[in-house]
Length: 500
Ligand code: AHR
Image 1 (tube, rainbow, N blue to C red):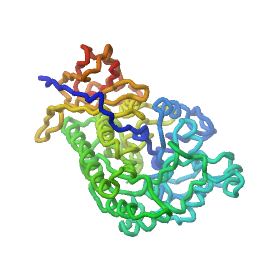
Image 2: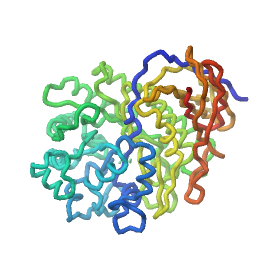
Image 3: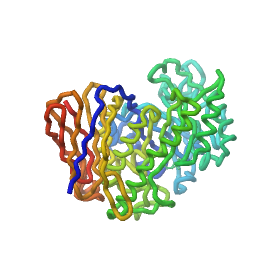
Image 4: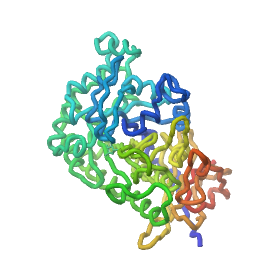
């Protein structure tokens, strides 16, 4: 029978800010993440603006994507930006991802056109693994230098006289692995040179929009890069700095990824959610090391690759990392957002992998068809969390057990959105039982509690091109009594409720 849970809010406490960049996206030259998913070319019959598909742009505009990380991933450390500008594009081979031909028809200027169309900022990862410092510095000049400079003139000749902005600059990608298998000592020496010489010449980019350099950091629980980068940072001088440390951590219970994305049972459901919840401890481990060198929390932990990594869908091209996306994966996304929120004083940006057609995608396309996944709808429901303030909450989560696994029964956070409205984000992990949740807002009275809930017939329910509405948000209402709200949270569901 359903267990009751009371969530007690400390409504008067001033919690930390929940940065909108926690909802960042990642679009790599990988499979159909760019080609087909974003870029169809001007001559395509699929409606597009300058080659960029309109349906995808409209869907992304609706979830106010704060930034897009580009061009990789492992791809970034083998990318030579000159191949992708101007009239003469080079056709290369995407060695990391299925050996696909890379036409380079989508390059720097097309990327900026795309993010301008969706209203997002740029997270550019430079090539540290196989490129030179000069190449990276020249790319920065191409993007950000004054129009009067030669680099700026080249950009203008390619159609964009105005300087671009680089909001986040990734100094390499996984240089402990696909980015060159570097010892941490070797990486930090390179990192310092990139931090110094990959200059942003766009001097109008200040304040909230100032560029943040993100160094490569840990993979999962491995703390070697965390230690090395943070120690090096603590010994910095006037000539360089970094503002972020990357963490890559996928939900993948076994490697190589082999769990199916469709038609799985409760065993996989419980295992995957149990695995994803390790994100909390993982962030705590790296945060503790960061605290040692940076007690003021100047350097952000940037979880710039996260999400569930499953077996590739049967019939899809090997190396394209195409998987379906179920209600379970939407629940998983919500659990991660709640974890990021609780660690939001240190975790100030995150990028789900990846935006379209790759891994835990928000959007799937097939030719002219497009479908929005449960993970997309979670992003839409969590919009009020962008730039909100955390309201500390305490509760006894109860339990959901399966076999020998014991998971929390529910999860909850609360925050005050930018416009001052108190919200709660609730997850019921139990796939069988509803939960009665009470929110106790202290002295704060309320008159109305309404929001949206995402659930579906089964934990493995999907949205397909044929049936795109199987897992979509529905209205939910709470019962209000003074400063207390109660709501019945259906099994396997996520709800965001505004308490007014
Ligand atoms: O997102 C897919 C790949 O996963 C990225 O290219 C790489 O950085 C990570 O290993």
